[in-house]
Image (tube, rainbow, N blue to C red; front, side):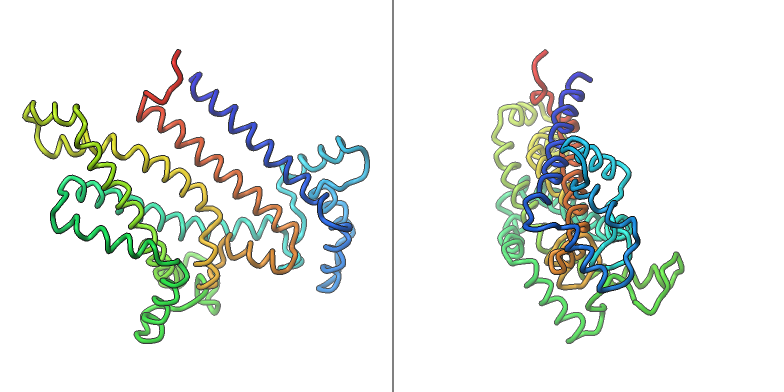
Length: 327
């Protein structure tokens, strides 16, 4: 428990620094960001009278001393009051975040887990059976990992939407359908998600496979593996219980980083497929100078990365007790 509380304290400090940085950034913007935002919103429709006060608190630019402004800003963040989006005026930023996070978690999260599990599993077998035909397939998968996401995405779009009309080429569902749990809508979501998911898996599985394969080869030369073989243990037990258990440790740390960045989406992939995830919304916010949406997305990504790293940091300590501090 002491180990967990120590880690938690470190990540809480990191979260506080991120929030404080988010408070400082609007002050570095030339001019008055609130007036700029209100002027853009007024061009798209009537602005509620309370919007200026909400924006000032959210950006940390309200009246009073710097401490009172900082307190107002923390209160707005704690209550998830991020104001109205310029891009989707008059929709609140919190509503956009909620919907886009669900799309990103469903697609990028699932595809990341699939690629990690598939890559680690294949890497384990390839490292165990090094020199066989399976091991010779590793260069092909690393070649796919070296190709940029957008190129793979464009190639798949051309093949499976133009040459063979198998999948839709954009959006996260058919716009003609109403959002709900109907079979038609769920089927449309799955069909629209398959091509982006295949893009992510093809582009990332090679890195997991190569990393796990190399760690397996290195681990198999350790003394404890030789001792297990001398004891006459079954090959499956040696592969999973001795070699893979230790070889997977670096992949666990890498998975933590990947899982944390899941919430930011795969920006290029979401842009190519016009998939309405966090990455796509960030691109729209930057293009429209949507400061409320940009600031909220920055906080969400930061907290997601910190939370994922904290959870895996704790898990890593239980998997490998050597990483825990001495008592």
